Image (tube, rainbow, N blue to C red; front, side, top):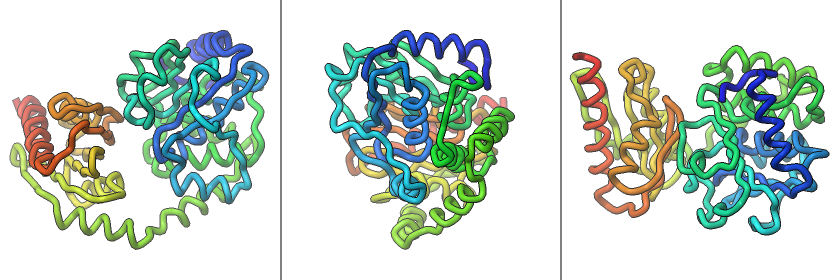
Length: 338
């Protein structure tokens, strides 16, 4: 699917979605430690299905991120949370902002046999293959935009606080519009027309991005433990391990000069690649799948950022991940130079 405001394809998908959901209860599943994009997308799904579904609630077995909880509190916004996941009680299960089962923190058996709708903006994963209905656009900078693309003009009614939640999620997911598309700006205008407070969103994100000591400590520890290898004489591959904040540590390693960064936290590995690496066709989502296939697990994400979960992490994982990352990069930069 190619998402876009009011595009014919998205309207057909919306009609398919409403036909599947009509009169049924809906549970919207978010990935663990659900970030703003996941929470906003899930709430938006419920709002989009008002009057179509008999009920709609949000479920995240591993809870919401600290930032998500703080924003909901700041906006005095309550979201309808499910007590549990039971596909016998829910007529339809909808996942948002996740491509693999492992991201959800639930047993895959809980999804099998259910009417499953997958709404996503990542590279294809195990969830995509299970979907009764797949609504996905890898080119969309945020999952919120994929859901917004389903709404025909006039069909969506949001409170100003809800519109502000969506706007804040888009700003965060696109790094203050650094990764925005033309459609992103159109959606922002629509949200502001519904009462979204742009100044509040910017102020909240700037304040929440003031880093606590534990996050700064994780960055420093990750950098001090990093194993680095230079590949093809031009690309730096760095691998390290931390106890938390693996995505932030990976982002820091890229900003400090790494072209490929892999940060391990128990069974989870966060990956980032630089613009220089992207020009050589080195994509984080493909690297995640490459490593997961060889070490056992699931991986996926975007061109510039991805993650994977390993089934059996152990003490040699760092060396293995570094070796696999180096081999992957060597293949790509070798092809590019040839």
